[in-house]
Structures are given as structure tokens and as C-alpha cells.
Length: 288
Image (tube, rainbow, N blue to C red; front, side, top):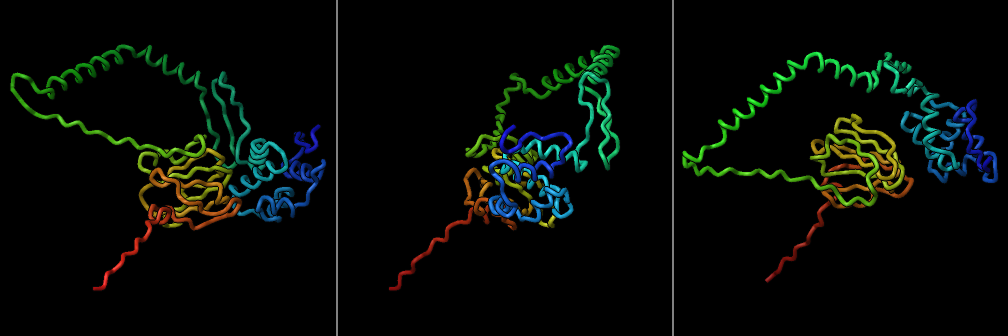
């Protein structure tokens, strides 16, 4: 067994695992010491160990704090977070065997979700196509005829001596910045073609983005390499749980850091003008 007691018996809760890892082995530490190292309030760490999650305001904070606490104690953060989600009822324990025809998963607070396996879906599609192959064939022939007819109608004939110039519209490709880290996972991809502001985590950090009305449009813990495309239309503000752990790219250029490492920063205006202010050029007036 390792000195940090990284093994997690099934009967232990997340709180018991965290407390056991902190209070045993050579690296015994007080909560106050760990609190200063992680920049997380002592009462939040104590709440995690006690399983009193109501003390922590939001679920995303609970999971983010648990992940950072586990990493500091030498535990597997993914295993701790997944176990915590199961304890809080945020995920369901269900059969993911793809060979089964139907897997039924009951999530607390939600209705039962019936998920058909890929094998069953492909089998049904194949049977449907095989049964109605005549109609599929006729439909394919009709599409081919329509395409050929449209080409005949719209392609100008050389006999008409037409000198029409066909303009080719070139669509500018959106080039992404040369990120400091390889991209791990992308979020907000629906904004990827228009976004002029992109956030990338260089350290683990909780990121929350709100629109002009204060509605949350994005909130999660980003790990190094994760990026988020900020919508181009509208006014948005962000909160970084670890301000120094987020790179802000504006039109392909890296903006200044929004704060120091392990420092929470809120009210960050996500606009080109606020993130990349133009330098004021002083003009001299010559007096004759």
C-alpha cells in the first residue's frame, strides 16, 4: 500500500477517502495548510470531507474543489470526481454492454431513458432498406435525373456565344491561434466559425461565462488543453476560478493574463476592446 493511501475501498465515501489521505502517511497535513496551498476556503474542504455539500454553493464548485483536493493529496482526480457524482446522484449506474438489445438507465430526478445499442439500430436500418429496396432505387434514380436536368438547364451553351463571367466566391477559412498547448477538448463549437475570442486552459481552472442579462451560457472546469469558443454576438463576462490558468486569445493574438495563478477573478469583459485595448498615441502640437 502506498504512503498516501491512494487505494479506495469500495465501502469508503469520497469524504472518508479525502480525510484518510490527508491524515495518514508521511505527509500528514492540517486542512488550514492545504487550504492555503489550493486557495480554497477551509470550510469548503471540511464540507467535502464531511459530505456536507450544501455548504458549497454550486455543483460545479463541489466537483472542481474535489478534483483539486484529490490531486493535492495524490489521489486519482477522475476517480474521485466520478465517485462523487455517483454519491450525489448526478450519474446513473447502468449497463453499457453494446451487445444488449436495449439498455435502460434510470437517473435520479429524470425519467428513464431507453438507449438502443448501435448493433440493434444498424440491424433495423438494414432490414428497413432491404424490405423497401425498390423505393430506395427509384428515389436514387429520381435524384440522378434531377441533377442531370439542372446541369443541362443552368450550364450556358457555347452556341449562344455567351461571355458570361462566372465569379468564384472564396470563403475565408477561419484560422485558429497557435495555442501554447495541444487542444484536448473543444467546447462551444457552434461558435467556432465566428468566434474572435477563444479561451484555453493552461492549468486546471473553473470557467463561467454569462451573457449581458446575467444568464450562464457556459460553466465547467477546464483542464489543460481544453478550449472554449466565446460567441461573437452579444456582450459576455467571465469568471475564472484560476485566473492565471486561462489563456485568452483575441483574433489570433494572446491577450494579457487576467490574474495570477490560483486567484479567482470575476467580471472579465470578453470583448476585443476590453481585452486588447489600443495604445493611445499622444500627438504634439507645434506652437508658432
